Length: 158
Image (cartoon, rainbow, N blue to C red; front, side, top):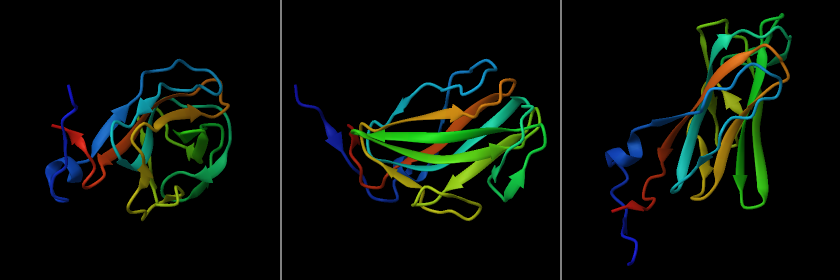
């Protein structure tokens, strides 16, 4: 049986409503890698964020979504990875300077760099997969989320 696909007008809610992909929890430990998210069609990834459950004890300098900051014994790093075919793209590392219970969000520009005014996100092909990895802090616990939307005119199942 043939697969039924369709696409809609560019302003259809399927294309303009942003979705969130949350990743399974990971315990404290350096360099944790979260589960993978596979793009089922062409997507735009608009941001990556983390909720801090347990603040880290390391110090880092980097972009936190609004400015370049230096954490002082409270942070961890996180990066978004996209694998397309045999090529891996890295977005980050970004810095989480959030204390327990706080959220850090980094908007992504078309080039994949973080910015407080980024628009357009990064383009992802159907079949690409993404995952988030934490930095080297051994005590930090972060819950990551990726904000995405279907690319206008991309095929979706009918």
